[in-house]
Length: 150
Image (cartoon, rainbow, N blue to C red; front, side, top):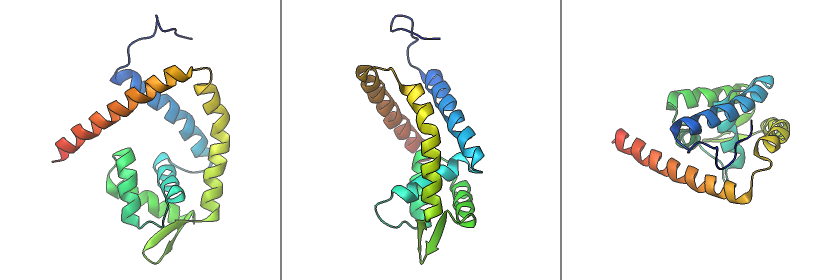
């Protein structure tokens, strides 16, 4: 089904959630083939893309900022990555291994064609508008969450 500007529903929390879970479902399908969970992938990506070595607490903080997940669950994901030797401890820091980098690259290669089909054909203007709206929604939701946590 293709929608046009005149038939598309207005963006709201339900539409955002449905889009998120549909896209996440695609990624989780690929991750499952590699024996990996979504939180593990987010933690590994954080370790791989960091500019400097990260402590476990640095990674917990980064992943929590992205997933809003319980720190204990994030630590469990880090422990699983350590067990699988996708990250290793070097003193107080964790760093990704070659195997971790290769796994992340393999997942990226598998999801790239699907992502191209999902995102393909959308105009730059539509993508820019969606980007602005999603950024604003995330900022406002993060502010509300921070107020709830206070």
